[in-house]
Image (cartoon, rainbow, N blue to C red; front, side, top):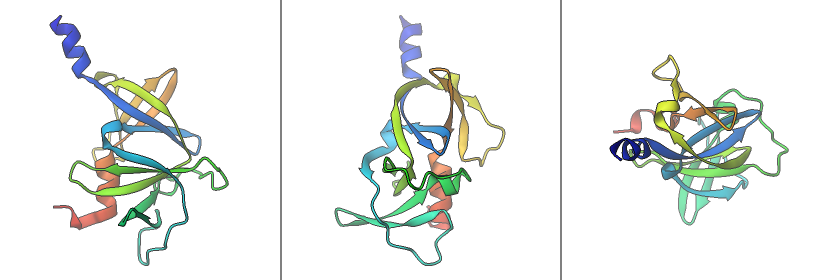
Length: 151
């Protein structure tokens, strides 16, 4: 019984999404909401992967174009593009522009194969239903966005 309970504790529910032809996932607990992509307001001097800002019920949020950030060919004419509103562990909220949300999956943390670089945007790769999915390291993506402003 303790083995089964221990195994359950290692399961994390992930949201799986596509950016170009690649698939990635992040923990569902980091997701606040998913909304239709709308026109963004340009932000001067922002990094090249920032597509702008949106107004979310009175809160201004920066939107990161994950295709540009991950150097993946974007699907700009894709009507299924959505913004995943995420909150990092330190409380920073921003939007991630993705081509489409695919599904949710339970991922056993022990099944994630780590990548070599510690500062990589990916914490590892995992097989879900015979597909190799990149596990996005949200803290690195958001950390690069806000740079030295993270305390």
